Image (cartoon, one colour):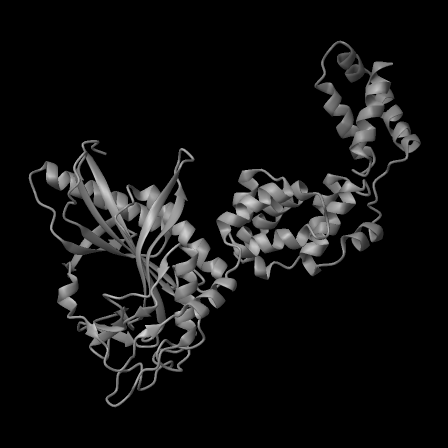
Length: 478
């Protein structure tokens, strides 16, 4: 990439809210219902119908504003954003413009060098979603209006993002906050979280912003990253060749790894905003705001720090465990049963998350209860079973969430700690492997692992590893 230029990026994120009904009517927001079944005269914009604001949407907006360090405006205005599109039956979208509900916040992200950077949030506002056009039906385009009126929060940053990696980090942090608040599921593939990127370049050292383009249609964080890198390169090449960047909207094609022009980029005056005459201003007083503030959960950054200080686990472990609220919850439930916090962290990060990834499920669908995982860890800590046996028991208790103590007893897997029994096995192994004994005595320490393996095999993995090591050293040194 040409180092004479720097990129300036701002993101607009639409988060679909986890309300059971739409923003201005009682229609269901359930995803996957038959086309045009979640509709009524209000969300279809029939004459004579009046919208009524869903209180839950206001609460979710305030909670997100508080969680992202925003000022909550006591009074905000709901406006009409006028434009024509086939999936917008009213001919306008109900949104907010000059007086949004939340302003002037920030999210702190971590850069590659571990330093922190604040990405300022210009505004968070409430709005309704449009419908959906389906273009893959031959020559016809179909319209599904189920999504019309689905509540959204639009989160708009200042142009504080410098590259694609920072954009990825910001989106990851925002998604974490949304899911911790339980106001959005963050599923980009289903359209619950959508991101548009405004991108421009300018010569390094200058202050004035360049002409920006907007890239849409990115359905994953990885695609956002790729699209931003592509558009930065495109703009730099264009300017170096003597061309000019045109203000326009581009659509990202993930299959071709390219962005293509869609239309000229609109400015706010093109939408002819004006206050919606059917909806009164939204008032959030200090009492209501304080009540909502008390409902905020422990947010991911704070929880990450607490896990390190309270449980003494490494920062990396804490970052993985708090990446999703449900994983953090699972860890905390596990350590109610076992006090070996590091072992609990290891089992969740390695074994539990592997199953979740392989089976493509969430941890809420994971069959093994935190309590039984904690019991399995306790069996290792108390030397009842070895770590190797625990790995064999894990798939068994995973099948039906059975108490691991039952499996260990039924299958006779209790660890052998009787020194006389282990000593007998060691004596037999040593007598059968005189060559390896001589190698060990001549200084080839690696042979020691051979003897350990042989003893564990002879005892079917049930011998206490520490006792095996101690007795072997004594026997081989004598």
